[in-house]
Length: 394
Figure 1 (cartoon, one colour):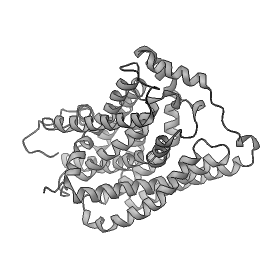
Figure 2 (cartoon, one colour; figure 1 turned 180 degrees about the vertical axis):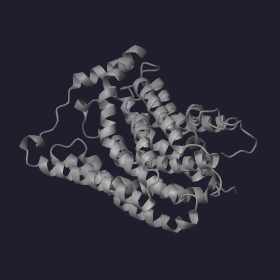
Figure 3 (tube, one colour; figure 1 turned 90 degrees about the vertical axis):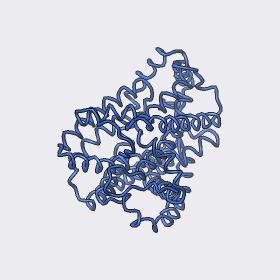
Figure 4 (tube, helix red, strand yellow; figure 1 turned 60 degrees about the vertical axis):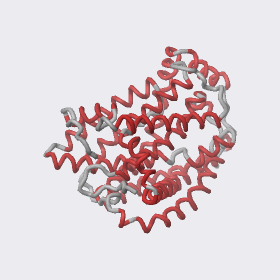
């Protein structure tokens, strides 16, 4: 049995790759429903989860996996800083180029495929992380915790204030005609879908920045602190704590996730109360997911080997998920949006993820980086990556 763990002296940390590959699965499950039914991307069509599949996705996936991805972004930033130090490069200049490339890539991805793109947000927040790169781990944790606490208080106050407004207790009106128009554009043809994207992107991009940005920044800081402490590179420091993280995370996160799904789209203060609770408890549930995977990788190294290639080519897989989903659901391809039951949509998500796992493993047998990662590294480093050598792990 081969151990997938990497000693601290190497640049590649396989736990990070496996976790990133795992997070991609949750992100796909959370996002694919919006492409399967484009009406859900309209604010006027927001409503409570419709059916058991949507309820489970909202409770256990929505807002839980992008926080893992954000944590790993912060952790990986410390690995990139170390690589720049080893090579005598300017980490500030490298990070600036990489963040600008992410912003540009995210805009293209958002306009052409997925209006909920997060790469642009990551690129912008990465610039803030670069400015804070010399912060001490303890200070980073405190700052991230303050951000989460402030968000929780804001949503709690909003719930309280909503109770003072009688009109707020009325359910939001859903416009069926707007939803039908969005579906028609999504399935009408490539140009129709592009028109829909151009209409939705400004509003949806703003929503991503407003509602996910602060939490993502907090997770960046947590990841930065963990990376500076080499947490995932020294498993003996945390392995005994994993069962406790699981018990606490699932014990708190699952009931709170159910409450969040139950209050989603509810009138009055309930929805804000659910969001306030979820702001904290989604982190606990995400931590439980991470702990479960780390234990699985330690016990069954094949799990880590299967997930790591997708994690090594995370940007390629993230964009690949959108491309494949668009080929299935939009006018770019089969135009099946609105015609499949939710359980079938989840089956397509599983098929897309499995296909990308296989493609990632095949690609990385002969290439050091994924296709999108090659472009990002080319821009970041200002020079082509070194040729792959037999047995290379970086």
